[in-house]
Length: 445
Image (cartoon, rainbow, N blue to C red; front, side, top):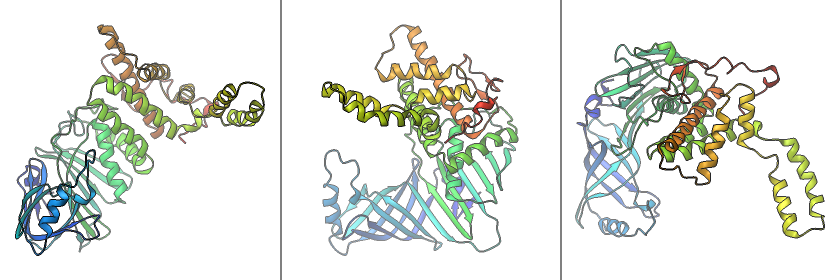
């Protein structure tokens, strides 16, 4: 993709794009009597950020009102909703571009004339598409050497089927291109592609430009790049080999996209939480990986960690306990204990997954050990062996985090073994995925 609604994509990715506008209107949000700035201007990519400039001739007291608004913030208030504006502009080719929630953080405001400046997260343009072109999607990502793996051969790229769509992934000097042809290109499907690539690469890939032609409408979006984003690679779930075969990549990619599109919101949110924790170091990751595993288990395997029959028995026993002739504090304690009996427990879910051969045998115990140490503020000693033990437990739990993903999606191919030194990539042990007949009913809830 070289042009998108008149925008030179290569120039945009290089940070050389300037988009001139005949007219731009900024309208204050969340205000009964909104401030409005209007005039010619331009949008430019400056150090990765989309920045706009509007030249406005004052017709009222908008400059004074804007200044009063700028000084109305209070301590602890990170975002003043009144300070956000909606952007709508017509470029020199007559195309309409819009953005929501832009700021007005710069410029020069005078009673007769204003130069309004601010930043935009993403800019969107949409218009009817005339012609018989099939449904298509292009996602152009800013260059990242982890996309989708550091050793992916540049040409000819990867091509495989994903449902009813054909997906092609290529990598160039200025960016990485994901092209999807045909199929149902819903917004959820498009977001699932980005999420799947993030999980597989272990980093937060940043979109630069997207173009979608779907149901007779062409939509282009330009994104700002967060150049200050801490983006160290979280250990990824699988190793993408050099000159990767398209069918190998397509196998896990398709499983992840289907899962993340339908009901993978909680898992991805926890992956993102773990990725952010990884930026702060091994201690932060140690605490968060155990918490993330608990959240994922409760969402997708809640039934395995819950004993509804026992919970019902304790509910029936509660009135009898409250009739006991003992101190009220003791009765209240007993009632509290009974009230929590039978509720979800991660250890029970892990035990069931282990017995059904969905996860490796030792991982449940290692999760419990890491969870106990991090939850109760047990600080690793200064001895190197203590730090190594913490690292071993953390990596074992990262392996568990991904094995839960594999159990949900049904992936049975090679994966990275973070429980073993050297982190070899291999097929799962024969014990995994050989589900005993008594446990055939185990499925993600």
